[in-house]
Image 1 (spheres, rainbow, N blue to C red):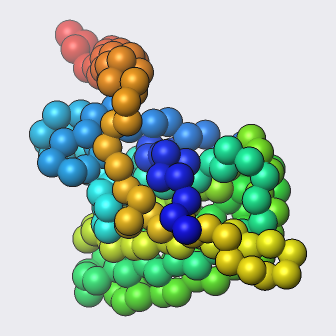
Image 2: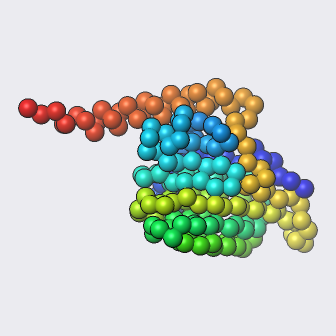
Image 3: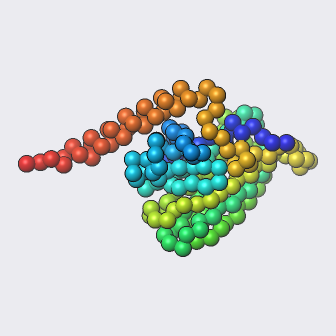
Length: 206
């Protein structure tokens, strides 16, 4: 059985190194050409590369991308994933799997090839989220990546119940989300204006 695809959401964020469970997730504000991204056009504003589509994506210079899974009910699951950094250039990408209750579950740098992830069975409680966070590993160079995550829920006797496949379950804005996206986009533009104003505050000195 296929799990509810609405339990997948897409956004940006950076690893909270001191407390991974507190890593903040900010939903993407825009969906275009089958991809979640920061705003219209890609890269947004000419240099903001953060984006996620069904099979691949790209982190930004100062922000990672996050695939988030939040179950509507407590479930025992197994986690498997594949991440590929195909370019021979750059220093690869960093992948961190996080529970918002238990913190960092795994972290690995994937560079110039493919890595497979298998995490032991664990309980994910209602209200808890799993974050699959990918950042540029400290250097924005050739950071395109491909990935797929499959979550499998089981009963105590290991009988298969449901699977959530990040590629098969990928979706754009769901019904009722467009107003929320407009609000997120407005907030993102406000934040950008504040950044631009502060960065230029001392640029014009006689």
